[in-house]
Image (cartoon, rainbow, N blue to C red; front, top):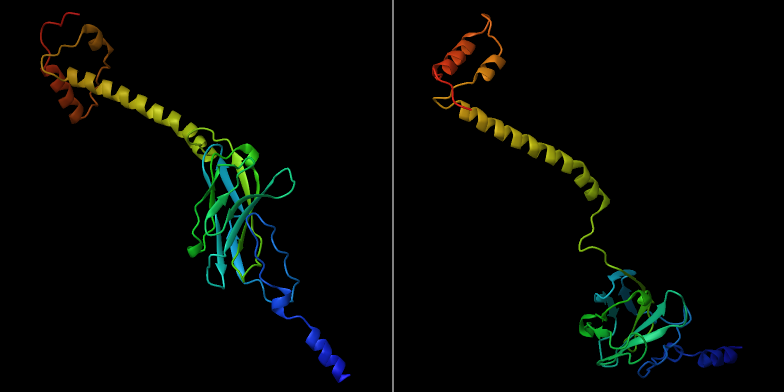
Length: 247
């Protein structure tokens, strides 16, 4: 029994045999994920924006960052894949190994540019002239042997048409509709007050003579008027002349 146990232990594969680092060429297939609990291979973490909004014809940045437990070497690989919203197989649109290799076929040809920096853990790309047909899921994959297994974050790209140069929110539009009439009313009142002030100022000049119509329209003052009213009346009468101004 002891000999069988020793033989069984000798036949048991090591962690390196179960999860060996696998290299691949340009646009090669990704290695399968290891079975859970076999070995601690998830030593590379990737982060990406879950949702990105873009406008038709305007460049959009697809961010991707990673952290590896191993030093960055020239064997580091970066791959971006794409699946349209309508479904279908994944399409490889970008590959990086020491230098960028954008896809040379398909609708993303000449529209993908490398903006990342692997030394800083950045594997971002930029999409030129996005279109409504580009809506879909983008996946960033990074391999830094021996760190080759990682999480699989997905970025959903939503491309829409841009409307006006600036879009007013419902609150801003409601505020304009409420305050604009009030502002117009205040401006009209200020204009009328300014005109009335100018008329009163002209009437207050020396030598001004009221016409017979203006005199008849004025209310008669009673004896109950105060001292201030009498002084005002005397001041108005002191500027009158015997001749009326011609009309």
